[in-house]
Length: 38
Image (cartoon, rainbow, N blue to C red; front, top):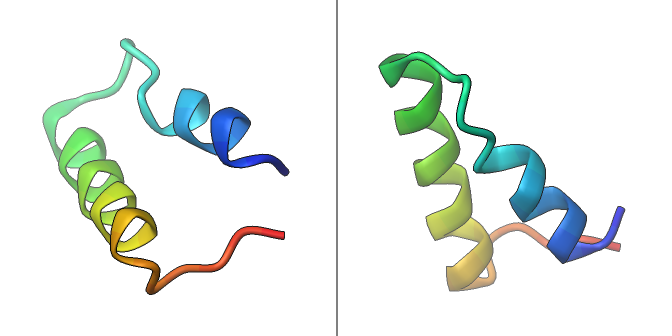
């Protein structure tokens, strides 16, 4: 999965607040390089 596809999945609008928070945390880890997408 490409990073762009991953981001689009993580930023879907129809998420509740809990889900959105978890996904934002994941995006931060991606930005920090903690998570490697292949």
